[in-house]
Image (cartoon, rainbow, N blue to C red; front, side, top):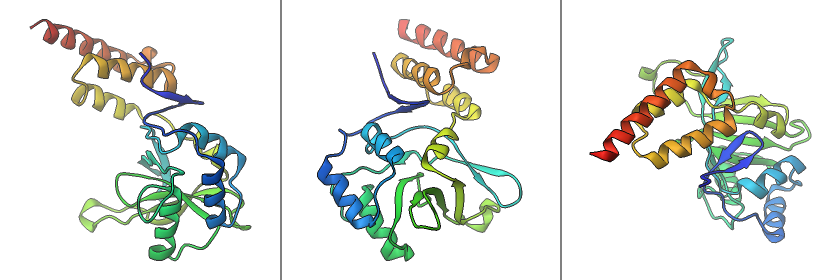
Length: 216
C-alpha cells in the first residue's frame, strides 16, 4: 500500500487534484504576477497537501529555529483565511498590509506562514512571517525573515528532523499501518534512515511491540 504522493524528496499527504487553468488564472489575476514555473510544477502534485518536514528559520543570532510549515494552501476558489491561495492573499492584505505580488502558500500550526515574494525587489525569494510568542516561551526571531532565494531552493532545504522521527516512533505510532506509513515517509525523505542506529533500533522495537500487542 502507498500512503504518500512523492515530489522530489517530499512525501505529501492529502493533496487535491491538480488546479485547473481557470484556478491558476484567478490566482495570478489577484496576485498581479505570473506564478513561477517551479511553483506551478509543485502545485500540480501538492495542491492543498500536508507534509511533515522541517524548515530552518534564522534566529537572528547566528542559529536557526526548526519550524514546520506543513500545510500547503490549495488553488480552490477562496474567500478569507481558508487555507486557499486566494483566501490567504486576501487575509494577508487586510490584516498585514501585504502588497500585491506576495503569495502566502503554507503555514505552520499557528499563524506563522511562508510567502513567495514576486515583487521586482524580491525576485521570487521565499520569506517567512514568524509570529511572536509570549515572553515566557523564550526569545524567538519574529516578523519577516528571508529563507531562500527561490522556491526550488526552499524546497531543497526541507528535511526530516531526526528528533521528530524518534519522538513519533516513541509516542505516536500505535498501529502497524502507521509504522508502514512511517517507513515509506522515511524512505522518501531520509533514504539512509536504516543506517541510523538509533532510529533503526527504535523502529525494530516498535515492530515487536505492535506484533505482540496484535497477538494479545
